[in-house]
Image 1 (cartoon, helix red, strand yellow):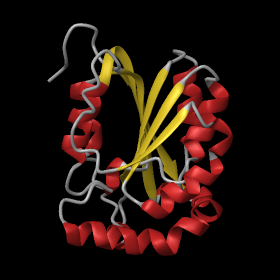
Image 2 (image 1 turned 45 degrees about the vertical axis):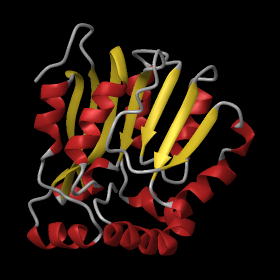
Image 3 (image 1 turned 30 degrees about the horizontal axis):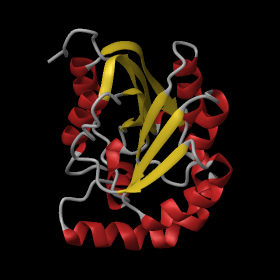
Image 4 (image 1 turned 135 degrees about the vertical axis):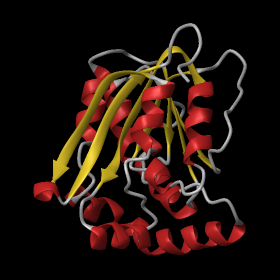
Length: 215
């Protein structure tokens, strides 16, 4: 989540204070495609610098550390509780991983240190508002030819389910896919059904054009 106000940030802290400790034990049942999208991305490139937006408990970063043993990885998240979980999980990778507590609404602007991969795993659908700024920042932070890797909720035909997900800060109206297609060259762009079609989730691997952006 990328809250735009102190009230939103406080709501996030309350939410993850309750959920951080049980997050990995419960989310496996509906956060589908996380390992699949990393496998797809790994088959195309071996990045040396990776950024995960909304890194949560560090589950994906742990996987990335094993897949890319030479890579240096940055994880950013707004929840201190989730980052506490990540820090404990990733302590064996000290020196390769840095964790930052902040909103991601602007690029890092680290001269000469663009990222080869930016990963968003079930995070952008919770950036309400802020998802457009985060995608622009990700584009700016990527090196030419770098990979934008995403797995996230897409949509649902069930109004009651969409409302329930909205109460959990998740937007599900297919808003991410068109912007991803405009900003990056799609390499993998798949919609997958979950629970017989109760919702669809999106697997996306795109490339930043070597000479400029798609708009």
